Amino acid sequence: MCMKNVFRILAVNPGSTSTKIALFENETEIFRETLRHSAEELTSFRDVQSQLDFRFDIVDRALQRRALNPAELDVFVGRGGGLLPLEGGVYRVTELLAAHAARGMSGQHPAQLAAQICKRLADRYGKPAFVVNPPDTDEFEDISRVTGLRGVYRESHVHALNQKETALRFCAARGLKYDEINLIICHLGGGISVTAHKKGRMTDSNDIIRGSGPLTPTRAGDLHYSAVIELAFSGEYTKEALTDKLSRLGGLTDHFGTSDAHAVYERAENGDKYAALVFDAMIYQCAKYAGAMAAALRGDVCAIILTGGLAREEYFTQKMKEYIGWIAEVAVIPGEFELEALASGALRVMRGEESAREYTGTPVWQGLFGGTEG
Image 1: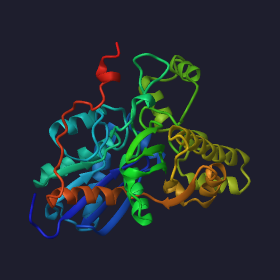
Image 2 (image 1 turned 60 degrees about the vertical axis):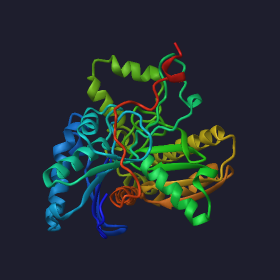
Image 3 (image 1 turned 45 degrees about the vertical axis):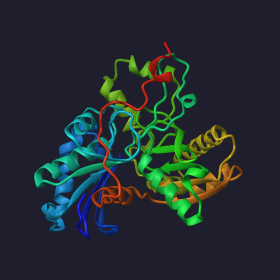
């Protein structure tokens, strides 16, 4: 795409409780910053999309504090999200992609803000903008999609960016090939996804957008549907308010008024029995999902990888090992590598090593048997 030797890349990654940014010069990280948002700040917004100006202004002010002129950057890259199912890869942020992100075509998630933040900066300064392996990356097998209601199917919404990057790093360190082995990767953060990686493809997982899986710092996780029906028809909630309660203000936030998992763990350590029970329940539910993914892989699991912010909690990882260590080696790769993965994807395109894909708005999965299941 360009013959420059050094590309300056700004990566933007909005999450449930923070917006992370980083500046890279090629592969070298110049700085990174986590711009944290409290649950109290976020409750003032009716939905994720209404946070756009708030999050953009925070990013803009962070760049100003560092005396960084965005006009001197070469490319803006974000996590992506809110899109229809698509193949993995690097996508140029077009008007259509940004519009679909704004509408949250796959449901409301903070990741949908990344493309829009990057596009505002790109349009303002005349630079390209990309997203890389968004949560809407869909590699599910048909058998993992079927539910007990005809016409209602499970869809792929996982932490694709960090999961793919973590898998590649694990394989590089072990001299393995990602497309030749099976892994279970547990992304443990404000949202949690536990995913079966079958020879390089994410074939099954819980849904971080439409709602399934373990309770998390911000999400309710699995609930019996009769309870959801009762809440929906109780008259206490609008559709938007109930969606927020389940997907943004649930989990630890609903139990304790905070999404800070470490703070809840400290309460447990200080003798709060209820905090101890709920925190242990979160771990227990993560372990159950890992066991389910092991069954999906027929027990052929090279390793189970724990990653994300909660993987820094030794208590959390030790309890997970006690539950699932009999399945396979449990490797702990704490933190997340999403910013590095974003920069790497943008760099490949800028160097001409990979072609940017065009988002068509046509989902890669359109129903069983190509939509002809009747």
